[in-house]
Image (cartoon, rainbow, N blue to C red; front, side, top):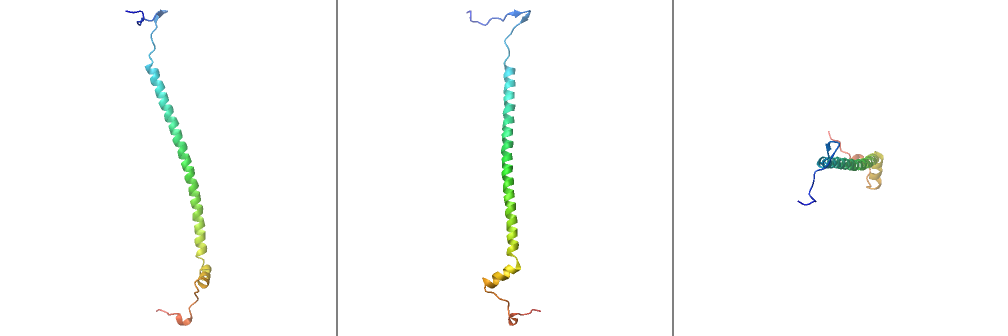
Length: 105
């Protein structure tokens, strides 16, 4: 055999040295990396959802304001005095005369 072959490691104080087994260390590092990536991904998802909730709340506030404005407009449009004014001025309507009124029994 050549001199480059693997030889036994020396003993120090009666304990035999051996090469460290890297598989458990690499497994732990991989597990730690996986957990870290999951944590970062979940925080990114939470942040995105918080932005979406904020956007939807803003939209809801706008829609509530629009609903309030539309109710106010509907109330002003259904005012009997306004309806009579529009009927007289724009539609040229007038109250019926006594001959035009028919009573139904």
